[in-house]
Amino acid sequence: MNALAVKAYDLRQDVLDIIVSGGGGHIGGDMSSMEIMLTLYSRMKVDPANPKDPDRDRFVLSKGHCVETLYAVLADRGFLDIEEVKAKFSRFGSEYIGHPHNTIPGIEMNSGSLGHGLSVCVGMALAARMDGKNYRVYTLMGDGELAEGSVWEGATSAGHYRLDNLCAIIDRNHLQISGTTEEVMAPGCLRERLEATGWHVIEVADGNDVDQLNAAFDEAENTKGMPTCIIANTVKGKGSALMENKAGWHHHLPNAEEYAQIKADLAARKEALLHE
Image (cartoon, rainbow, N blue to C red; front, top):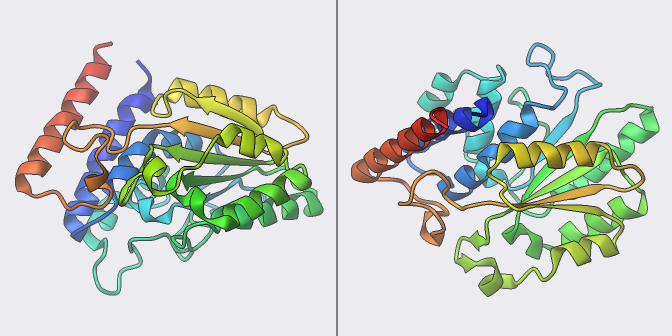
């Protein structure tokens, strides 16, 4: 049994509660990206007692609409109070809004306008090199986001400058708000596109598997002379058959019956892991 894999289901319940309390949220991508963010934050050099440490690792949630999972993970690491997040999410005047903003401890960048995270992270990685720092920079993008041209400008720059302190992760759940990524804007062969611009590419068969993700992050840290992109094949709405692989759950507020079903499904998945 992997403790992080079990914890992922507790945090999925937190995300469900945040969304229901706030009256909406991007639940499908929250659930697909949970293990990615949880695994990454279990490894990153960050300290909730010193969130602006100049030597900290940096993370930018480029797919900022999945902020509910980021809130849950930051709370798990001690940056936030999860009950406060649940109580204040999407309330008038609250700092806990539907996209990240950097007045909240642990959040590096205001994000949500898709396509900008990678380019900002290129700047952060270059700054580390110029300042002689050894921190690492990470960004998580959605696969629908890859239709933004700015992503590929950032990718070309990262390859050109051989930024081996930069790691991008793609949440490859194959769905976006209006259908499959292939129907809306087919991304083509991502490995070939990224390798052509000077990236080391790691494909993770199950991007909701903590062990596979840890192996990929290990490989990324040991890759020198080029940036790394991890393509994590995930399940949109992971955790309940009610949501899984359904584009309609990209942004959806569960009703009382749906909430009860998802809660039961999350508990059952957690219980199954505990008995493995």
